[in-house]
Length: 187
Image (cartoon, rainbow, N blue to C red; front, side):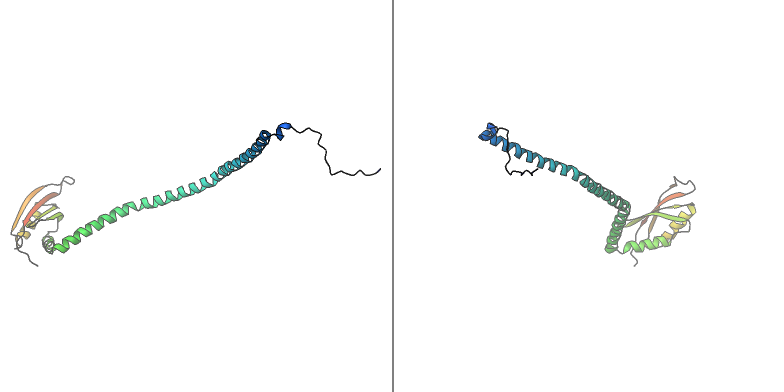
């Protein structure tokens, strides 16, 4: 048997559609193939966005965790910061008082030097011409001794017991307040 040769020509027995030869047919065929490509491109974009969402979610979660950690660190320092700012404020006020007048430190030294053993001062208020001293003690005799000690100093010409009362927290103690008029300044 002899080998049959394949011919390069192909025969199409299906008749050509006359609609595809018309202008409307060619435009419709072009639109359908073009829109098919557009649909494929849109599907690719949508799938890319869907897949990238997982990557972006992981980055977002990492950033949120990092922010929470840093926020916790900042919150842990807030008490220290408040305390530090309060101390700075007190130091600033003390520095201003120290710059304006040397007198309070002298009176404070004198008042504290006359304290009996069982008298404890709670507040000292310095006025222009007076000092008010408040404290706590366990005996009236200690208050009297403190007043006598203050009266013996020429810089405190007028020492007055402004008030004495029982301490509300501990009934065995007494609160007292003494007003002291300032005399000359001894530097």
